[in-house]
Image (cartoon, rainbow, N blue to C red):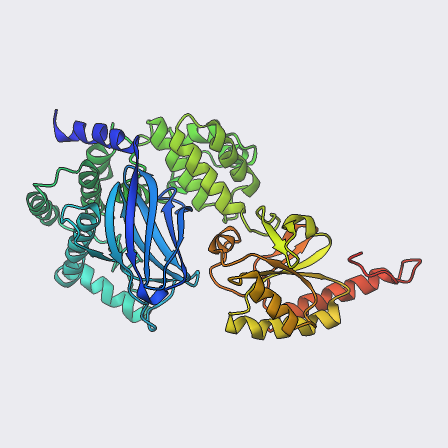
Length: 505
């Protein structure tokens, strides 16, 4: 049996078995903090799932363990610091360095650092993928210097838009200039060198990633799409857990919806999406020569609907309904997961949605379902006594509460390490007499609320999210509350009781 046929077979066998991954974590700079291990549920939405949560001891040591299937992209998070790695059955010793104070943060407020693996086998998947990515990046960077046409394009772009020529966080695709095309001879030669260099690697998953890393180098505006399709996609299985495959089809079918099925069936496509007719939408996708395979066509349809969700052409409710239908009714199990993740991403903690189900404790230790408290206009604040910046916002919130407390209810979630810390804080600030809930030093609460730093504020109307996130009390929240008060006062003028009862009651 040749390698092309053998690889998917072995990969399926590997993926079907759950096994333990054991990480010995050394993180002296983070003693006493929670270390959380996540896996990426799918490589399209990059939704994460918590696998393990442990506390780093005073020596800066922790053991993180979880069961994983096959090879999965994972992330370790400590506070606002993250690092990514590949999870596969086995043991790792990982050192997590302190973040560089000058390192850039991502849009969600986190800082990414590179894990340092100790005594790692050179054939370990983390070593292999790291080495392969460096070689692919090196080839791309070299082409910027040696491809005269591409290099000139890069200069023109930089002159017109300074600072725009930056690779993405994964350093691929290497579009340091306008969608380059590398010569076939150069790519062929590079591929031969790669295959020779990794000849002793017997890992089918790695070879699939390498294959599609090379496929990405062959893709570009002057590429022959039919040849690429025949070589890399026709009759091939969909590789949901191979990052370069997902990246390749994302590029190969980018804007496919608007370029093909929508152009051919504009009214029919709009009507089918509005009516949430998933099968009809998929049939229009499958008219294209490259999408006769049902699994590939449905995956491309999901990706394209997801990418076009925030546009003005298609009905958003219809797209959500299609995702909802496929999350339970697709014949492809992987698509059920991806559709559910897309639906979650488009609806969780969004305006018009609701809070996730949170069960916390009041200051007297009573268990409280947060959604049972969200009657009328409510401001939900997430804070902690140890958070220096939070104090400035709590002072501002205290001032607003004096003026608008009759018009809006304040509920605060404390992420203090102990209930005693919260008790001491509320005792020291008796004027902040709104409802306090104790969340504890539990970073999963922040995950559920989809926040990466505190303080955070949300405005709700009868449990429905109205402002996500809401502007902070020190900058913007006052104007919203002023309008709310003005509207309530205007309505109260018409009431027989002359507005004697506060609006929230």
